[in-house]
Length: 128
Image (cartoon, rainbow, N blue to C red; front, top):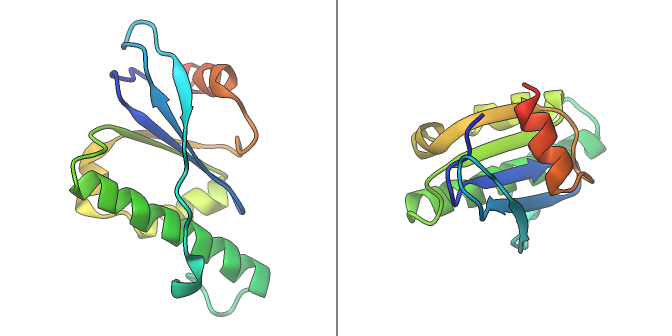
């Protein structure tokens, strides 16, 4: 997957929301950790009210992350986006994608890489 300069990689897991930005170019990407925003997941209900409280909290966190990303895309602060999340979480995230996110989205990776560093993330994205 080619990652143009400035591409944002959002790594979303049950508790964390990490952002990395390609500070290199397409031929030689280099990911740098960017500050992640504080998310207010209390204003978001989980996708399923039939699941456990833990599942609902995870879904609320994921929805808050996608809402933040949508605002950044809409505000033209993110032009290119890659979303990485565990398979189940990615399925829930897709339900909340806006048209803007869909247009900015370069790709997705259904894998739990919440603790992975830049080089490992790049390796996983190349191995697709």
